[in-house]
Length: 179
Picture 1: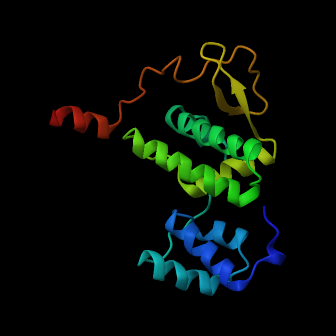
Picture 2: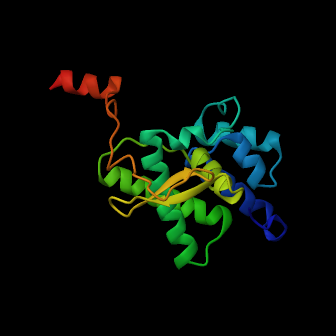
């Protein structure tokens, strides 16, 4: 995603630390920096105070197409598209700035953060690979993440046509019980 040859080691470490603070997984750090795995492990422990989580990165587009993640992924992609269209930012820097806008928006409106930095980065990679696209909702005109091979001429978003079980999570049930 970025030109790694013109960045100093100190800048790479600084970038890695910023990504860790934003919640990046080790695989993202390895893909986007020239810092060794051993150094990234030490840096992660230094910044977060714990070892990095283990496990694979998301490898399927399915998660982004479910109701709540789709709303958050679509919001992030609108910020990302804004960055690409209105700034000189590209690649990882556009992802970081769009993700910061996403976090500010979530905090401002008191919403739960659904999209991690690693998922946002993966989402952009899925778009770049032509696996996902933005579809325009025929009801509200908003742009939402959709499968690249779905027919979207009559697309209706998850906000205009809320699924019956939307918002029926354990957390919302606990909040309602507390009231």
